[in-house]
Image 1 (cartoon, one colour):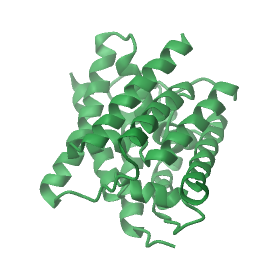
Image 2: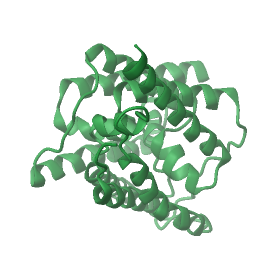
Image 3: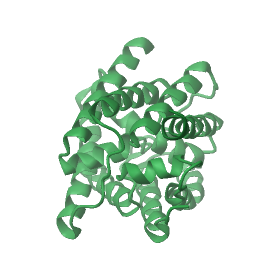
Image 4: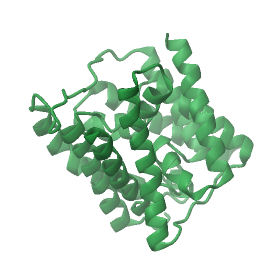
Length: 136
Length: 139
């Protein structure tokens, strides 16, 4: 029960971060990607702000054998840079550039109940499901 | 250049980073939103699904809570329904294929000094830039 509660609270914090940074506004995201237009540095500052916290903290946390709730630390073990990684990231980038949404901000924006956001999230789930079928 | 949201960006980013560090410290999990979702729709024991569902609900509730206190924040859609449908399919498909998105590869992966995540992050930003260039300045 406790991991469910902490997951919920931590995600709430994550979401408030996204909103304060205005990453739930696709115009900000497209503005960052539009280097030939009126370039918007906000997303770069968000990445910088996040990495300023995670870069020093992650190695320190990863030294632990177990999490505070006694769970093993589950960190990805894959090391190969293969075609799936690069092709998948490229496809994600194209979708990101088209809509200005990545998964976190899209889910946080569901609270707005804007039909276009709901449509995006449903399509995203379908896309994940399709890729899952190809993977297996 | 457009006016960047300097303080909002840095403070919001720091909160995102803090949340990612807390999820690893407390739950032992990587705060990669696409991966958390993927584990929700694929075959997994219920125990695995509950914390993931709670994370997704937390994302929605955080933004609902903020909107309730401060009023709605700007959300300027950049494309119509057909564009959003296609974008959603590509984002879902691509993040699953490459096992991560902006949070999993960008925030957590780079913090783990993962070469895979560095390659993925450079690739999705490059293709995002290329896509915006083509849709805004060429066609």
